[in-house]
Amino acid sequence: MNTQTYLLHTVRDIGEPRRGGGPNNCRRERLCRIDHKTLLSAVRRFEFTRRSYFEGHDRVTIEVQNGCVMATKNRVAMYSRGNAERRVLSKREWERFIDRLFSELQLHTWAPDYRGRAVPDGAQWSVTVTLGTGEQIRTGGCNAFPTCWAAFTGCVNELFLPADAQSSLRVCETPADGGRRSETGSQGMQSKYRYLEFTEDPDAFLMALE
Image 1 (cartoon, rainbow, N blue to C red):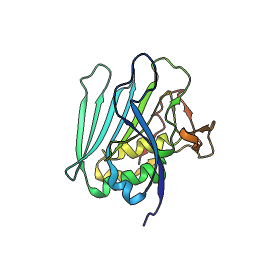
Image 2 (tube, one colour):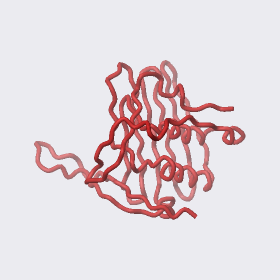
Image 3 (cartoon, one colour):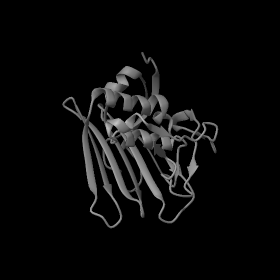
Image 4 (cartoon, rainbow, N blue to C red):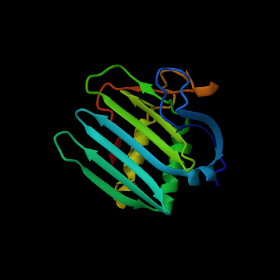
């Protein structure tokens, strides 16, 4: 049984930004410690977006409503009308997905913002996890990614693979010691944020199906 606990940095929008300067009270931030079992039931929504000029726009949402977990994947490619895939996740699939996000990929320790070198027609991405309290865990970037990016995108893509293909999924990960720099997290949290610069198609090495 997983007894791990997580220190989450959450944000919550509570109003519109003030005009004309002055204190900005539109967002509330806090640190909260949560155990693994509580986290599994606390997450109500997951959203992942990724866009680039040539590759188009991908958006994956997973929502828990009335005991049902619905996963939707929308893709709008260049010069196409786009398409959507939908499927209902089992409780086991949903809990395994959340477990991998936090236990393996350590999503709660990712930097709030990743920035790489300016590249024309580069890639922008964002991840938002919404809890039942309305608080959110947010991260994103432009032309730079955490080094576990390959494992993360593989984890998301696997939800939409045929059942017989999921067991053969293999993910190529960047070694954990390949970090480029470390930064200080919000409110004094010390976390190492590792980067991959956007020098070519970031999906070219992400996953392979045997």
